Length: 119
Image: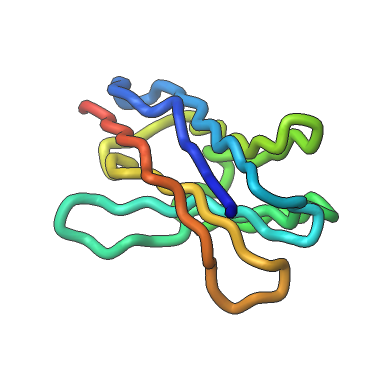
């Protein structure tokens, strides 16, 4: 059973930084893609960034390019999201997700971690 556990959320002032972690377990992830999504109050969940575990290729939403960085630590089965130059509009619940590399949709989700950016 795949389990994804996020941590690292919190309250930060605009312009600050946070690093989120996603500890993955339950299978080998070498043929999986991992992603981060977020959901702001009253809005739909949106894609933030993704990474292919095997190649390390990354993908970013335009709104976070050059500010956020996704990475993975294969030895510890952990995915990180480094968030810099945070803005109030980055506020939301951040979810870690996993899918088979060429699958069309993410099948596994974490419970989410709250990120609040104050102005």
